[in-house]
Every structure is written in structure tokens, then in C-alpha cells.
Length: 332
Image (cartoon, rainbow, N blue to C red; front, side, top):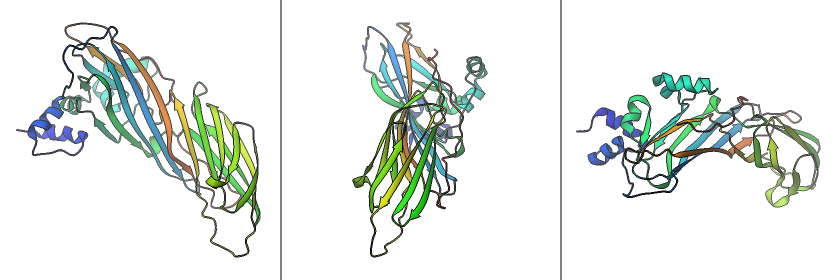
């Protein structure tokens, strides 16, 4: 018989198939797919926390939506039949485990978070997670995604603040100024930052001035593409451009002003604030000590800032500017 607790926890895995009671029970108790006789000269576990941050800011300087979609990926090179317990700064988990919370506080890890949606790999023992938020599992060998999660709205840490200003001089000329500032700590360096600044389809040329990176008008994109290879935390840069438009005899539809879009990669940073606190590895027969490594990486998703509704006004990607602490080694 399937208990209500089993069904409740199985919801975290996706759509339950009620007719397959055996599968539901396996998912609730954790399913191991490890072959026998696995042996490594060095026992290692690699943890990658990968996130994608999306943002939409209106022309009235209002955050319409902010979202983080993340996943924890593991590369397992462990001998035997190990059991792992994974811990991060989940508020409900720390509320249930006071000693872990005290250890994290002593190491300066004080921020906690509540994820909106979590889905686990089938190896996770969902019954235990439902009881006390412990993520326990016997990992498959090799690479797999341990969990996927989502975080929304005000608690999302937006890594860049963008302020566009448009000044219309005549029907055939306008100026655009875009400022971009990093809200993450100085110790973190973003890479491959690309700012797509739309211009009208009848743009003829653009005189561009920027100190950081390189920028050029790309007619096929109907945009000025501003590329910054390395962007240090707590720094800001500005681009200005004088855009010349082709005169048209027939008045057409007004320009729709597509939003400015950002792409970026930020190592050792998370938009959610998720921090790995520990990854315990226990193998009852071999009793080895596994090496554990953790990396964080955040990429830009649909990160968009609309032009101001009023010409000459600015709009910023306002969001929590809390700087996350640098990543720390994983404890065991």
C-alpha cells in the first residue's frame, strides 16, 4: 500500500503514475543503478551548480519578472557502493538541523533560501527528504543531474543593473546612452558579456563611443552589439551612440523598441544565493575519504530591459544588489 507521505514526496519527481505502485515506492526510497565492482584509484566527486538568470524590466523602471532556473550536476568517480548526503543553505533544512546551521554561521554562511520548485534524480530518497529535508542518495556512476530548482521574484539577485537613455533630436537622428553596472563582489569576474542595443530598422549608421570592450552597429541584427570580455564586480561602464536614420517618404508604423538584452557568464556566483554546505560520502566496506570539488556558474537567460517610455528618461534593472560571498571549499 502506498502511504500519503510517499505520494506527497513523489510529487517532487514529476507526474506520479498511480498505477505503478512499485515504481512510486522505489522513487520514494531511492533507486540505485550502480553496477558492482566499481573501483577508482582516486575517489572524487565534482559538484557543479549551474544557474540561468532571467529578468524583465518595464519602461517605467518596474521589475516585471525575475527568475532563476538552476541545477546541481554531479560527476561521480567513487568506488564501491557509497551513500551521499548533500546539504545546501536551504532554510527548512537548517531549521531542522541546528548543528549544521551553527557550523555554517561560524564560517560566515548566514544567508538561507527557500526554493520555489525542486525536482530530484530518481536516486534521491524522497521519503527522507520529506521527513527532514535531508538529500540522501546512492549515486549512479559518472555524470548526472542531482536536482533542478527554480527561484522567482524579489529574492533573485540580479547581477547587472542597466540604465538606457534615449534622446530624440529629429526624425532622422537620435542619441542613445546605456550604462551597465555589476552588483556582484569585486572578487568575481564576469566573462563574455554581450549587450544587444536595438536600433530602428532604417538606421543607416551609428557613431559609437565606449571605453570598455568593443561595440559596432550590426545591420543584420538591427542593433548595436557591445561586447565586454571581462567585467569585474562593482564596476560600471557606459556606451554612447549617435544613430543616423534613413529618411522615409511614407510614414510607417512607429518603432516598437525591442528591449535591450544581456548575455553573460559569471563563474563562482549564483543568482539564487545557493551555497553548497557539505557533501558527505560514506562507503561501509572501503572506508575511504573522497575528494570533493564544487563550482558555481551563472549565465544570462532572458535578461531584458525595455527602453524608457519617455524619451530622455532612464530605466534601470532594479533588483536586490546583495553581493553573495565567494564560494568556499565543500565540507564533509
